[in-house]
Length: 184
Length: 371
Image (cartoon, rainbow over all chains, first blue to last red; front, top):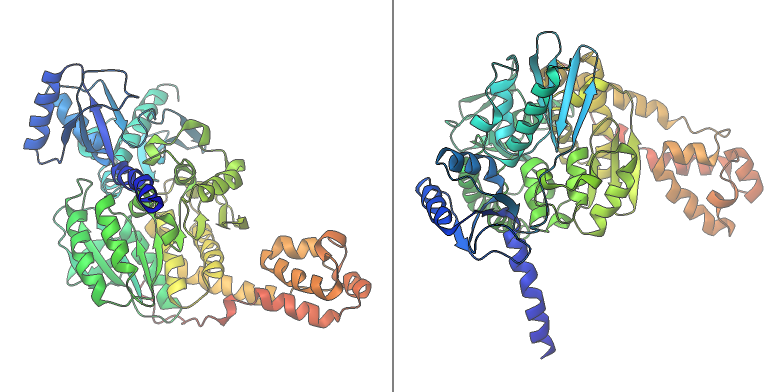
């Protein structure tokens, strides 16, 4: 009996940890959920429609579970299809919110903005992106290759060519840099 | 032998497994060329420079193209599950790979069946997935930056992007973040936290801080964390004990950066070429320092400089029937020896032995260098 209890108690933790790489997309109504599921499945993503956990107070009675790391590409795809989610949240802890703190560093000739684990540095005079650092998702080296050496206004946006949450964080740093460049 | 598992930022790059060479700043594996910019190619280039300098063989690479959609990473995971069973690497470093929990568990279960178990190092995406899977303690070393340390410390965060704000970015909170990461089981056996200062830590907290030379610009340069991971992996695979290898690697990486006279616009490839020179310098200075414990140094000075000497003082505590660090922390070694009737020369030798590490490594002089 004790062993059974132990096994029962142990089980949810394993299940939970398996879900830590997943997120929920929350929509206004079920018809959006159905449309979004169709769009995402057609593009080859592994998604699942399910009931929302009690912590989620917005949206309808259904949510879509998706691979969290690919949040950037997935939300962009849905925006293009005209079905933006109300909220995107991690399955492991639905009350968590994306990082919204920025750190900056002035190096004199250069200026750096950091969002979460991503850092973007420009040369002030030319507004040239000179370095991108931080971030461990596989699109980071690719984003750096595409953006470094280009002026801020000519470089591709991480939202357009990135895929992952690191790309998302870089997008925030990129937007913050654009906003601050007007003040430099 | 060292194995490096990672991705290349080119969607056309095929799945390749084999010895990786570095010639004139370009990596070669099975006839494929890879430019060294940042990410896994930077890690590999730094590892090769280090291995060559230490007279070791080139690393084995498992590489595939992936630009973030995870297609390449999935194929790589699949290949590794089969191939790692057949190989016996001394050290394996896992790097920029899409974090996928299911595949990570399968890889780990294969690795844990290999005897002897290789030394496992994880950085970037693979460190994320180890934490997301709650299997961090299966790894010997993680090499997070400050943002990633905050992510490890946040027991709820599934990715650095969701790290809670109250944990982020204050350097003076590093010891708290490290303690919190260990408290929730989200750290490897050892951590080498890279940043403005580098911190080497274990479950008991920060063991060593490496903060010289200090180059502010390094923080902005993409790939300097990758080079540190490459250097430490290479030194460990050459046989040095992990703790000492981590301290040496941090010093080498900082020194190589300093030799490049970096600005925030410097590219990591400019730093990598100075790694051999930095290794030589670190080994030289270590050998000099080795003779640097002298009778006029206080116990505090010695422990502050060489944390590992604390255990020697503790051993002597038993002999003297008291606590040297509590009762004589500010006293010079000569006075300590007199006070407790100890053999001063033997005490110095024992203290030096505990820090005599780096100069046991052989170095290869120029000629073997590729650039």
